[in-house]
Length: 162
Image (cartoon, rainbow, N blue to C red; front, top):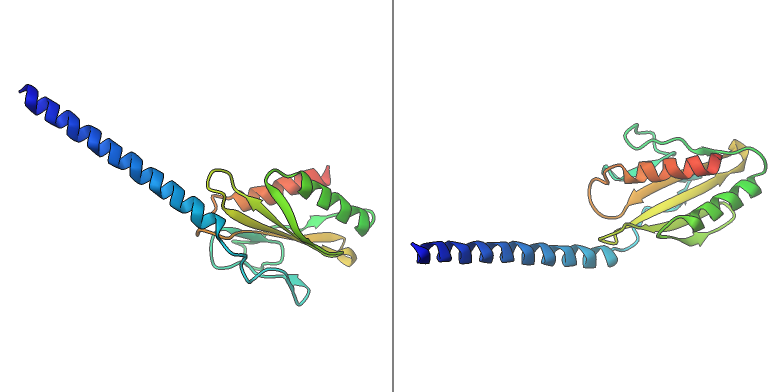
């Protein structure tokens, strides 16, 4: 009887060890794949608008006509120049965010997601005549972002308006 109990205990420990090793391997693999993810080709401004969202649930854009991806642009009062400077300062203060491209009317920032290091692209397009800043936030990896991009833009909006 004792040998049977000992045998089951050894088998249980071996199974737990295999699960832990598999989880560790998958974590490392996902981290490596996230860090080598390339910048997607569909970024920037085309015909005066931000590129549309891909057919995934990991993107929001004020220029997208599909309600699944649609989010309001960031309105501003005062001068466009002051609004653009203010939004750039907010982006610089965002955790794990780096501005990688900036012109007088376009900003692209990369946002690193904690734990696995996935990269999201955050784009802004200044539209002085419309008194607004168009915005697009999209994950490079995965099919669904659990609403992270929408929350990111809404938090940016909250800070920008205040």
